[in-house]
Length: 307
Image (cartoon, rainbow, N blue to C red; front, side, top):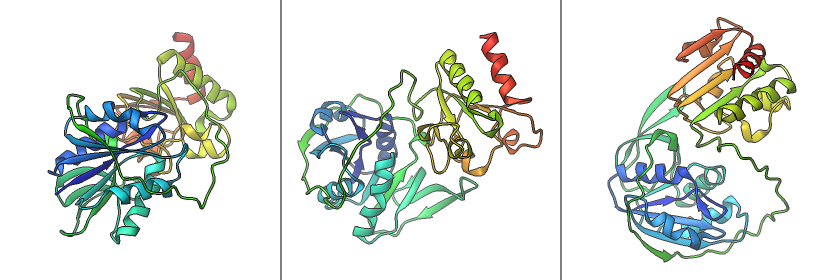
């Protein structure tokens, strides 16, 4: 049994989710090979080789801004003989994973949250409302994305060998045009220890501007519900939930968020949840550790004064 882990790799460095995916893969019981595919992948080899449990690192260079099809092609070129293919969670890997599964003729597993055995896994469905245990058929390749917030990251105490991987041609059916990347000194939302998040209860752009100032004072990342993003109150990169980012900070502060299942699916792994909502019947009060029935916008203003 050989396990291939597809790294979450961007701008010359590994993302923290890769270490968690390696930890999940190690629980399946086989030797782990880590595939780093992307522009500048060779430079990430030394960093990748230190992850505990990794026996071999394969580095594959691609053009800048690879498409999901290009990443899928690199995986297929390097997965021969593998019994499992685990993808560290990222938007690119989440799109590449089902393409790999389709080519291999197997059913994909999304957001694995527990590894119970080589072919037995736990995952959430219905926006986290139901946790299922899934048994994969022996002999079929397991292709899955890992909900990396559910696993403690692998330690950086290894010394794996690094080698060039087999490179497949880049996908030519689409062409990268441009990207608009917003730089920030704030912690990255996916790995932040503290997150302050806002929903419709913050009412308007001024409410989210105040939330952003609160995040600056707390050294926190900013999150938002899909409703707030769709209304233009917050940028897309702030979205937390089933169709956004999955976070698990030490502290998650929810202001004006009712607690729809789709949003809860993205933050239920948080260690401490604080909720502020003026509706005492809001579902988020059923899952929070500390709750305050109050106007969210006014509460943010009061916290800014106190800090």
